[in-house]
Length: 414
Image (tube, rainbow, N blue to C red; front, top):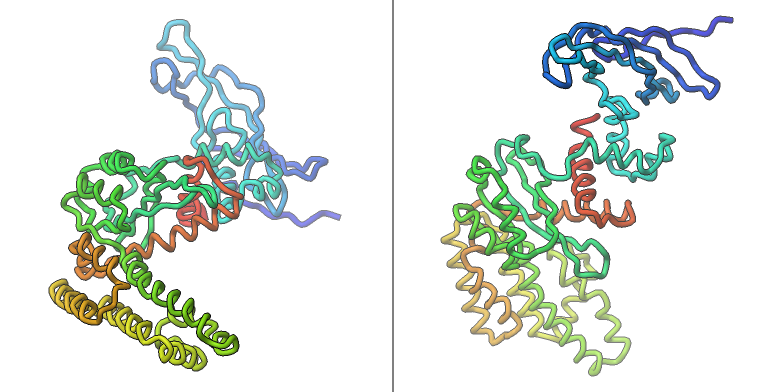
């Protein structure tokens, strides 16, 4: 009985199919021949047309067909140059295959697509390849540094760090950009947080792109801020609101810990247990509190009026940052907040107020266009998932390649 047959375009330019067969291993072997009738002399660089013969048969991995492992089989043509002394021969180069590679370009792109959001080990097992083979494809096809020619603007720059190893302080810096269309791109993985390292990278940005950077968002680490001021003096430097919020919430946290420590000694055990969950309730937005959390906070505030005062001051400052107001208006409101805190006698916000004094303009810059590095924080979380999935990546070149692939892989190869 004859099996049903289908015809599928090979989708490779300038080749013809000689035959196809399935071997004993169930693999599909497609024998092809190049229809291209020229080569480029490797010595003089001229186009040559004198056919000299063929090289040995080459077998290349190609895209799977109906779940079958597929190979292309062909003999590269050799051409003789009539222009050069000795008439050297040159093998024909084909656009769909890199010499000495065991794979067609299409198959390597297929592998890269499989690698998005997974591990090299997983792809190697699924495709019947070695770990080193998959890693070699990644290294050949994905650059380990940014290609500036891909971009016409950079818009919003973000800098943040991540630890390569859990529990250790070997931080690397992730430099990203958020374009106006919302697309996030990876620009660099820097070896450390030193100012000189950051400066060296910023200097590598082409001048045409530097002119398109509107703002740079980062935390209050001087290695970042001084490098940005030095190399991108025209760029608006914004201290990320997340780090500002964390700084003033630390003041409330200090009061909470002191109050609970005191109440643990003063209250009967059953009354102290009724305050359980207050930490999370204090951290939530008021509108998100459950009725039970409201009761817990009210009970705690009756026992610690200072905590209630600090809580109200924290929420008042948060409300200022939530408002869509001008820099001038924000400045007036924050100054009034500082005066009110001073009059209250609370000292828990002293460190934060000192921080405000040091970074006053950079914090107020948030109100120019409400820029934050929230996109960086979210991106860092994705990188942490990538690291866990791959059981850690300590090679910075490989880390950049994997980040780039997870970001761009579907767009490039799907």
